[in-house]
Length: 78
Image 1: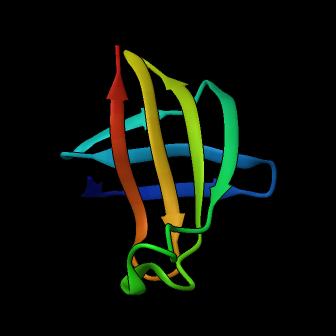
Image 2: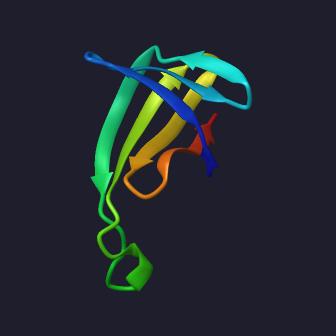
C-alpha cells in the first residue's frame, strides 16, 4: 500500500516507479472498479478505485488509482 508514480499514455499504462526503480508495463491482465464498503465504513463513502493487475518484469503487480490517494501499489504477486 505505497504511493507510486505511473506513466499513462493514450493507449494505456506504460510504466510505474516504485522505490526508485521503473517497471515497464508488459501486459494488463485485468482491471476493475471498487466503490468501497460504504455500508461498513463512512470514510469509504464515495471512494472509487480503479484497479489494474499487470505484468511488469520481474513479476505481477496490482495497483489502483483513487481520486483521494492518487496511484497506489496495493500488492506484489508471486
